[in-house]
Image (cartoon, rainbow, N blue to C red; front, top):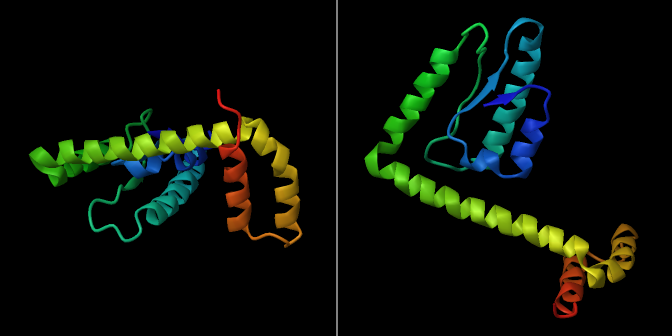
Length: 157
C-alpha cells in the first residue's frame, strides 16, 4: 500500500520492494489527488514490468483505491484473494522463502555499498578513479575493479 507523491515509489524501487510485492495499491485516489494517484500507479506499473520482465508467474497488479471513499477497495481485496489462489497451499511457503533470499541479498548489497562508501582505502582512490572514468580514460569495469581492490587492501579491523 503506497501513496502518491510521498517518494514511496522510488524507495520501493531502490530497496527491492517491488520484487517481493504481490499486489500494489496506491491509496488516496480521491478528489483532486486522484490524477496524482493514477500517475503514481502508472509509474509503478512501468517499474513492475521491468522488474518482472520475462516472468512466467504472477506479475503484481498495480491498482488505485480510496480508503476514505471506499472506491476500488473491494477490487484490491479481490486481487489479494486471486493471488492467494494462484499460490495454492504450498506455493506461499516457497514464494516467501524465495522472497527472503532476495531480501537477504538486497540487504547484503546495501551493506556492502555502505561499507565501500565508508572505507578510507576506497576514499583514497575514488577521486582518481572517478576522474579517469569521466575523462574516458578508464572503463567502468576497470574502475569497479580498482575500487574493490582498494577495499580488499583495507586495514584489518
